[in-house]
Amino acid sequence: MTAADLSKPGVEPTALRRRSRSAVARSAGGDRSTTVVLGLVLLAAGVLVALLSYGVFGTARAGRPLLDPMIVDAVRAQPLLARVIAIAAGVVLVLLGLTWAARSVRPERRPDLALDGGPDTMIVISSAAVADAVAGQAGELPGVGRARARLVGPDTAPALRITLWLADDADVREVLRRLDDQVLATARSSLGLAALPVAVRLELERTHPHPRVA
Amino acid sequence: MRVLLRILAPLLGLALAAAGVLFVIEVVAAWVRPDATAGLLVPWPDWRATLENLTWADAPVPGIAIGVAAVGVALVLLGLAARRSDIHLDAPGGIAVTTAPRVLARLVGTRIRATDDVAGAAVTASARKVSVTAQAWGDATPELRGTVRSRVDELLDELPLRRRPRVGVSLQEREGPR
Image 1 (tube, one colour):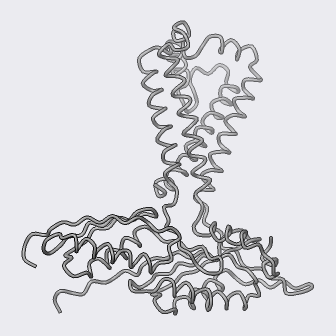
Image 2 (cartoon, each protein chain N blue to C red):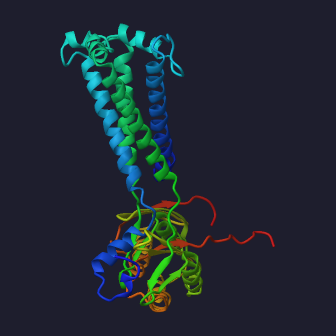
Image 3 (tube, chains in turn purple, red):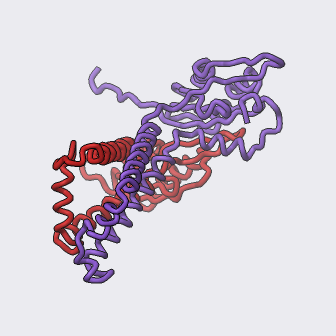
């Protein structure tokens, strides 16, 4: 689905909800699964070596040196193959590590909104322009102290993430209703989008304690 | 936990990459300098001698293995615990609305502290449970407990929470003048 496709009616509500949910925050799924896999590898290796050390696989096996002469002989028998395998393993390790680190520190994408303006025409609205317009309108809703918005997700399927800082006495239900009816309806109609995935994060405005001494 | 994961993940990635670089450098160096008796960056001939003389049952090996397994358990727990603890709210138009447990706790705390006969309150909140420990100016009567609970229920009714958390209230008597 592309941003231009969003302007067509008939986007599945389930798909829209799923994309809205995934826009709630930057996903840490990749980091989490890689950390769990690395942890499981270390756990399995540690447990197996501990069992080997305590003689669970046989006392004779536990008494062999860590760098087994059998393995050394096998490597010496095929030196070229062993070197190529070792270098390939090192390169794989480098690529995996660099990819993981780069993905972890890469800033989140803020895609521009590309709309289909008809034959031979593509209208591009910058991410900052959409975000500023939505945040400006949302910040004026009753009960909202300030608001921040940004477009997130891939270029082909952008979503809107809005953070609202509410007053302590704000009517949350009413704020959300007005946000949908006024701000998002305006955004959808002005951008010509039938459906726009939206995730809203609610925070509370910081209260400033009154000074004890005037 | 998410902050720890965000810090640790790139460091682990860089550590893996650094290990790979050292490994490749040493293998290539040993290949092009077959007569060398020392490693280029890593003293691997010394390590090799140690590994040849050490058996699996010797002293530091089981301890190191248990340490590695413990690090593995810690990483697995970190990866599993770094999930978001958001509270989800219902909203019109398919909007996904979330807030942090501390926001709900602050709303509950503000509401409780505005109650007569309550001197202060400590609140912990999650998507499943809201626990309130209120300090009463006078006696911690069952009526005051009911009032506090009803104030919390009132607030939870006002919020469009997708899942209504259970409410636990305990009262403490505050010593001293009001």
